[in-house]
Length: 176
Image (tube, rainbow, N blue to C red; front, side, top):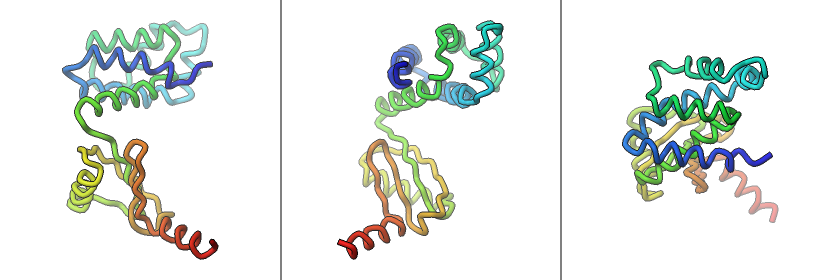
């Protein structure tokens, strides 16, 4: 079977091209549906040969707080009709990458030993945007194993200023 990334790419590109003016709105409903598509129960339901594509569509779109546009509904129907429901999380990720590339933004995953909120997060975001040279959409994750400091992942770049990383560097230096 082909890689999910390979399967998802044409869907993400087609959706991105069709919704140029409303990438943020599209990303919103796409993320919601992609999250639902990760549940094993939904995938099992969709794989049942006794269940029609219309029933799967109705169930998938029921997780949305509002009705889909005609374009969005057609996209979801196409994905379901082609048996690619499992690829929706990857479609959402690739769609986000395309939207970020167009707007000059990137997603930043910030891992910290302690919660970061409010003004502290705003200051960190400003420093990181200077460091990476682009606007960042931040998401904070608490990881107590870091002991202190932060670890930031932006695309394939990693900035690790955590205490754990420094201790590992010291260990490597001492054992070398």
